[in-house]
Length: 497
Image (cartoon, rainbow, N blue to C red):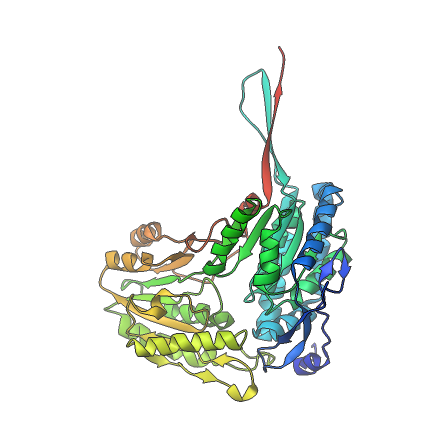
């Protein structure tokens, strides 16, 4: 049996390198500015990370463009790119403990999930797109006998990837997998709150055979490095995951620069609809608690609006409140912890302000509603469940990005659908019913990119991820992600009779 890992000892011995990764190696930033990387586990600094500026982004984009223009990667056969990306996935798994520790220290998620979810999901994503790239065929259009029209996918060129802090590795992989597999070069700007795994992934990619300059990483603030990347005239497309507020800026930056393609994966306020004909309320309650409190509620698809028929609402609230003690905030480096710390003090204040808003507007906290473990210096909140919530309340309308669940009651199916769709967002939803007609009818009526039926947490890389309305455009995952990172070219040949 493998001995138990002393994660605290490993954390104490950790020395980070926060410099950008450009042209296949770590380099000093142009002006030497840094950011203190504060761990949410205990509020202490892990070390300094470069505060990337426009000059650093420009260097990374020039490196990426040079790599694309000389075709050192794009010019390789799909089967050759596949082999490199497969080695990259294997090396991610080989470094699983190192990457998991960085992820947990950087953004506060429990080490058991960094190990069992984030690292394997990252590796699987890279491997899946590696396998896909030499199985995507081009097309021949059905023209007349005097023509041959070829429709081919070509890599776009330089892709800017801007990812959030809640799933740093997985969100990076969702961009890197299809972008690299298609033959593009990438400049990745991770969140300033969680840059460490992105920088390490770049090293592992080069060690796996990815040519220098194809994958570059510049850490820094969104309004500095992120803005510079989105405005850069030599970036062909931006894949962004983050808030709706910043997603609007991405579209603005495209208009101000070169009209680059922008693909936004934005916020959510996902509805979880429980109908009275569903006969296992306990499973529905345990599912919504598990999905809501996973990753401390810091998930864009968290089912934060629970719509329950009034005839079963009291029982459902009792059952979901009974789940809360299983998700008490605790030390993320303890292998048994299931809910860790919020990413930073600012997010802690934001979540607590929403909890205060819910109380002030008349909702009743049946569980949680308080900060936890303040003596550690970390940023923890107890799992919180509100009953008596109405659609007009702030906690029912705005994305909280913390472990706060709201229960709303409905009278009939029509009202449930109307309440669920009464949102600026449309990322995911869930329908709980034993009637197949109702399940299909409601699923069709819901304006959401993914509708789960009698489950919530089942997922796979083979299905697209993205939303309607202000939840964004484009899709991550599945073969559809290649649409974001490739151009379609038609080559029309006249054939003389």
